[in-house]
Amino acid sequence: MIVVCKPEESPMWFDRLWKNTVDLFRSLDIPVRTLECCSGDLADLKVKSLDVEAWSPRQKKYFEVGSCSNLGDAQARRLQIRVNGENGKYLPHTLNNTVVAPPRMLIAFLENNLQADGSVKIPEILRPYMGGKEVLVPVK
Image (cartoon, rainbow, N blue to C red):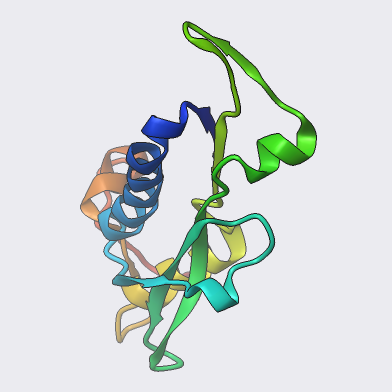
């Protein structure tokens, strides 16, 4: 996800992007936590960055599944992006969010929904798309 917005809207959009990622994983019964990157660890241009990590029962630790970043007006400056606003031209803020890295999402989904008998519990939110099934049973 990419957002180009007014500077004063940047914090609101950052929170919304981060919440989208966290809500998605939680809706799939995947425990997540958020780590705020310290300024010394931020890549060039980033003003703020949060990593979303999912719990891995197999590894018994959290691993990164997504990242949300606010680049302030740095990217607009570098790319010479200007917006004609009501009060003249301004540099917009840019933000991005990976939301989902598909292989990592699949790992987190399977590990957190795998049951002792080898079946996979289908989270409530996905059941309407799975014909009402509650569990996927492996075929032997």
